[in-house]
Image (cartoon, rainbow, N blue to C red; front, side, top):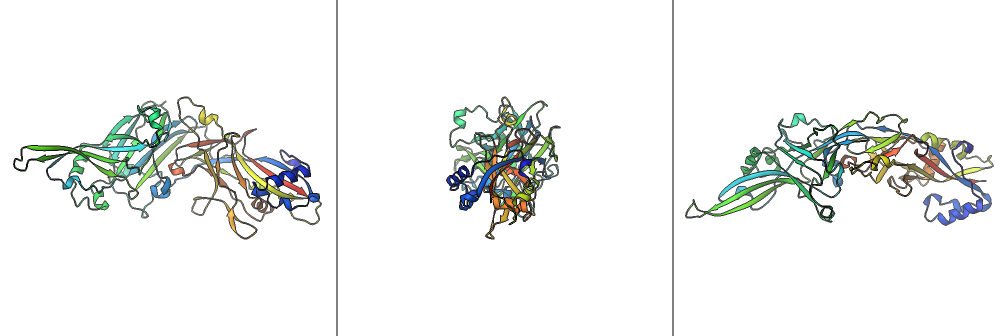
Length: 476
């Protein structure tokens, strides 16, 4: 590589450079060792910026059941006509199970009459996306077969639903996500909002007539109720934006609730009612039950995939798009400058390598009446042999396996409007000299199977294209 071919080059005097490095080395581990160079050997230094491009790819499928990312598991529900990306549909398949209430309805003496069965869905403040004031209609179907337990079966975003549900919905209700609840209530620290969909009387009668044997264990209970498929009806208005909602699938307020009456008669006169108690019984959704999310995407025509010529890179959850980036070639352009030779009058060392990605905030925040905040965390990762995202590792000079980036996750810098990833200089030099291979890397958002937010980055752009910035030392 010849430095005059690069886009930018800043040179400083040796004295200024050395003092700057010594002042900053405590805070910048990538400059460790530079201060050991004799001042007379230090010629100058600079920063070189080089642009590169990525491309958008879409996974064929991703695992979306609770066991795929246990700590971050959540249900996502909705229809969202994203003005940038296009239509996304999200729905949930879940089991429910029996609870261990001591006053269970099948143990009561007297008459028990069911009033209703409702599906309750619980979610918190700002766990929504899109037009939160636009009505949406939730439909509930019953599964026609049981879900297999883990690890016998894993479930993905593209599971065929038609083959495992009964054709007619057993419940339907229309809501707006924010409802009539004031912002002051929503923002209370422990507030959990709950919406309820009444289900069929047939299911209510089936549940009220459960026997002790059918409540003996989870498998026996599945013989009565396999599970539920919860989806959102496509709006009649083709121009509707719609919305997405992320709910707490394992919150105690997300459940199937049976409301019933317990009638107690006089022991001596069976026709005389002594007491009517209104009760409820909770069929919870727990970590022992199976659930998974389903996602479908219908992208706008101007969303370009598999082409580095695209203007934008999209990081989308829910089995959506994510960028593939490759900067091995621009790193290898440094091979000549970093080659070791006693015959050279001038040598180069790398003190720091940063990769910058710049969000297009206008495509995320410039829409009236829509709540569409971008995801504030972005990961730059590799893939393992099983296709899972993992940190990029390399073997350092001490023979230890360490991460190639100081952090594989970057927080959004709102002041400078970028995401930054810092590469270990030793790994950069290994790649440049051909001592290490650097395959394609990928930008993702955390837990994409349970994350409905997105981030839009510039790609092909005169000013805000992705950049690699290399800080180098020039010495004798």
